[in-house]
Image (cartoon, rainbow over all chains, first blue to last red; front, side):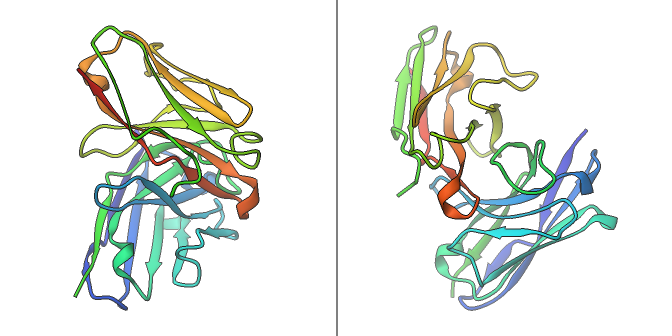
Length: 123
Length: 111
């Protein structure tokens, strides 16, 4: 059974940093690209970042480019999102999502999602 | 303002058929597959339709997807109370360096 379990969310001040983790199980982690998708309170879904299966290629939404870093540790079946220079508009539930077929990049075809972790940026 | 445009709300009585539209452009829906996600209240999104009109295992055939030109649609027939949820369309966008774009979501109410 595929499971994705996010952690690391919490309250952080504007300008601060936070690292999210996503522990994966039930599939060969390195064979699939992974993404982070966020959802601000009461709002829709926004794709944030993706990383290829082997970690060599990363992608970012313009809204987080230069502030967020995505990485993965395949030996630990774990995906990360390092968030720096956080802003109030980064407040959201952050989901990690498994790409269904692609190892190289993201297509928007996410067959499994985690339960999400809430990040609140506020003073 | 989402790149893909969906109506904010839709509704129908139990047993009825409802359709949710998703409008895009040549750089996303017009040249790439469309995906639909269902998000029940307080839960994570769930894949409902992939590659325009394919259903993952376990998704009832009451749900169907279609795509034509730069628009896509999700149809739900035989509406049930448990279908009340938010529905999102998504696609890859050629013009944005390979980003995934979502619609703003449609809140479906079962009357």
